[in-house]
Image 1 (cartoon, one colour):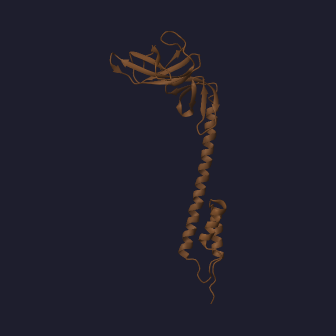
Image 2 (cartoon, helix red, strand yellow):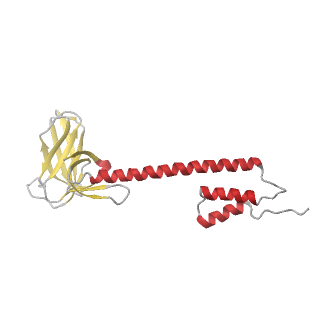
Image 3 (cartoon, one colour):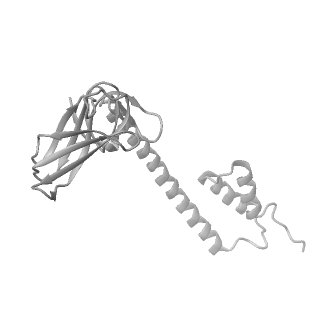
Length: 218
C-alpha cells in the first residue's frame, strides 16, 4: 500500500508562520494545530501524548497573552495617572531632595532637613566647578525641614551669574558633634515635560522628576 505523506510537517508550518509575521500569536498556534490534524498521515497519526502536550502549550500561551494584556492596560493607566499628577503640579511650589539647582538671577528658596537639633547650620553654595562662592549661616536649628531665601550674592555681596549651582549643608551640635543635614530645593512649577519615560517638572529652580518631589504647596 502506498504511503500517504503529510502535506506539511509541523516544523514547516511553524517556520512559515514565523516568516510571515515574526510572532506566533495564539490564533496562529490554534490554526497550526488544526492544520496539523487535517493533514496528518492516516497511517501514522499524531501521538496522543504529543497532541496533549501541544494543547497544554496552547492553554499556557493563551494565559500568557491574557497576562500581557492586563499588564499593558495597567501600564497604560499608570502612565495616564502620572501625566495627571504632573499636570496638577502646575503653579504650585514643590520641594525636592538634592542640592542641584538653577539660578536665573532671581532669589532662590533653598532648604535643608535636620535629623536632630543643631547649634550651627551653614549652607555652602558651589558653582559648576565645585568652588564655594557663598556661605549662608542659617538661623533655624531645630530638627525638621527649613527654608531660607538666597538672593544670589557671593561672599562679597556681588550678584553671581545665572547658571547651575550646588548647595551643601553642614550642621553641628556643640563644637564638634555633626548633625545629619540634607539639602532641599524649592521651586515654582511653570511647565511640565510629558515626553520620555519620566515626567519632568519645569521650575524656576531647575527641572525635576516626580520621583524627586518631597512636598507640594499651593
